[in-house]
Amino acid sequence: MNIIPSIFNQKKISYTVLGGAENPSKVLMNVTCIVLCENGNMLRSRVLENLLAKGFERIIMIERKAPGVSAQQLSHQFPTVRFLYILEEGVTSGEMLNIAVAESESKYILVVHEEMCAENFDFDAHTAKRLSEKNVFCVVPRLFSNAMQKLPVEFEPSAENSIFKVEILNGSKDYRPTLYSASLAGFYDREKIIMLGGFDYTITSEYWQKLDFFFRSWLWGEQTIIANCFDLFYMDQIPDEDQSADISYLRFYLKNLLPVFAADHGKIPSSSFLAFKAHSSCGFVESLRQFRDACRWTEKNKYRFKTDAVNLMQNWNQNEADKF
Image (cartoon, rainbow, N blue to C red; front, top):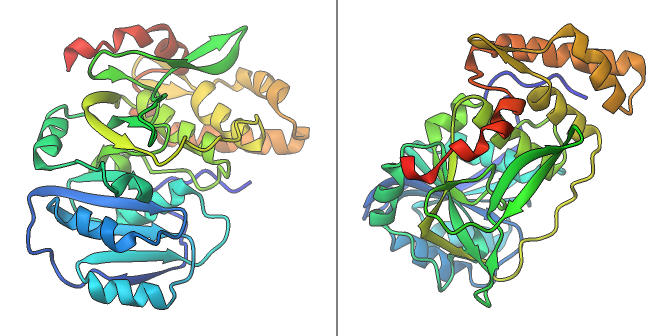
């Protein structure tokens, strides 16, 4: 496994950029809308017309394929939209966001999936202002299926018999905390994404990469909350995720569950190697290499830690919605 990255968007991924040379004629908010495109959408023109009417400072559409004839046509039809096409295989949604965030310049980022931008998409400058006033790292929307079924968006970290787990809750209080965004959709502070280092490309599991990013944000003093004024609609259920405790989980464990907070900084005690080895499916030499890499990464970022996993879970309910 590669060395834990120390800077934002450290991995260089090949991609093609089309369009985006012109500025939008109507800008109503300092927000870049990043659209994750997972499947080819025959209604993309309608989606883009809907997004352009909202007054975003920039619209970036990103997907994992080479641009074809239709891509060239879209870039001419919508010259203010920047289309990014990733040419490499195996790129995760988190890495796609790293690339798109690096391409943006706005203070805030709205992340959506393409299928969320059709008929029911109703994000405007007033909503952006309300969300930005919360001054948090990420505001997560309420998610609904096309049949108006409410999808889970509230997650709480916990431990049972010293085993980390994520509880799914069903709260209704406005601005309640959540561990992460289930679909990555949300309203983000761009500077904080970069400060946090973005998504770790060495974690290849989409699920554990996402948890690593958001768990790190909580350990480093940032917050993610749910806003009842912010709704997005899926055409279907959120796809099932592979949550297997594989090699990606080990890196998540090293970076987020092993560090302890002491006085004013985080550190990984040398004595915790035995605890890690007990969780590791690797041999002794590889386990020691990974452990030392995590120790170096934690030492480099030690003053960014504001708490540790144990305290975060014990005090989770103190992240009350009332303060927002």
